[in-house]
Image (cartoon, rainbow, N blue to C red; front, side, top):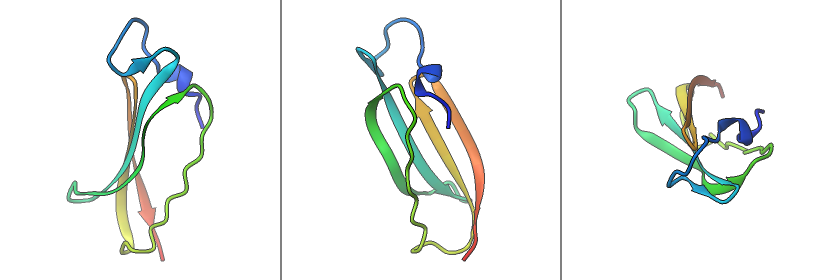
Length: 81
């Protein structure tokens, strides 16, 4: 995992509270519908782990998106049961 400090922007932004960064991690299906919100909170810099339980979802392709300050990252994942 990458350090959230790497994702913070310089200067003041509404996503910053002192050394905290607004972090949002969501999972979407191939049609763009949000199927899970895993993180939606302010967090200080550091390494974090999140467990995703996809037992109620069908097998297939999903996308996860993380926003941390001004940093945005979208990746594809395959859920296989």
